[in-house]
Length: 184
Image 1 (cartoon, rainbow, N blue to C red):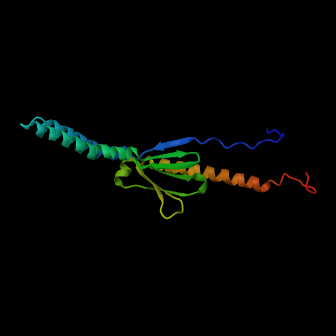
Image 2: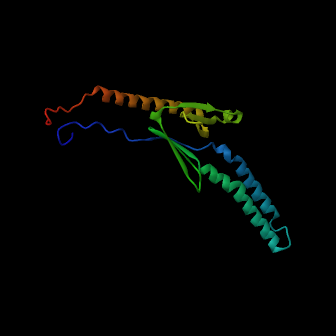
Image 3: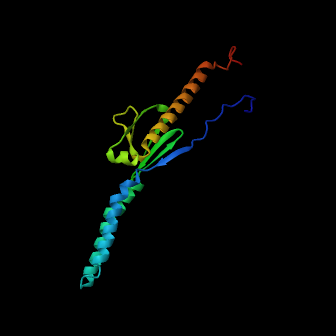
């Protein structure tokens, strides 16, 4: 109730997180395999050379390779995530330079799942969200892509229904103000 005795409209339900996603963890297979090989080779070759600087070079080389072949791909994988809420999809990417993109469910869009053979085996896929812009927004290699597609369809439908109901209520509600010669 407001001060004047009129009921206030119900505030919208708070936004809640439905899912937080990253690309499938399979993307880290080759970097982790490279780390195991680098550590094994570094351990084997360290101490094999007569000069101290040569052995130090093995350690430095192994550390640089581990940085290049394991740590950078790990940060790239950690730097990309997708959050699906009751109102929108939030896509974040980047590590040093962050990019954030939001898509509201109420705008309506088309959701398509694209899978290659390997993604089909693991149940992941690329979820393409076509918003009517030049190119679709892609949630790359997300686990359970079919479930994500179904959830996005449901969220978009619920959001579309809420917007249509709100617009219909506004259109059917007449002006609540009556003025007679400049006064109420």
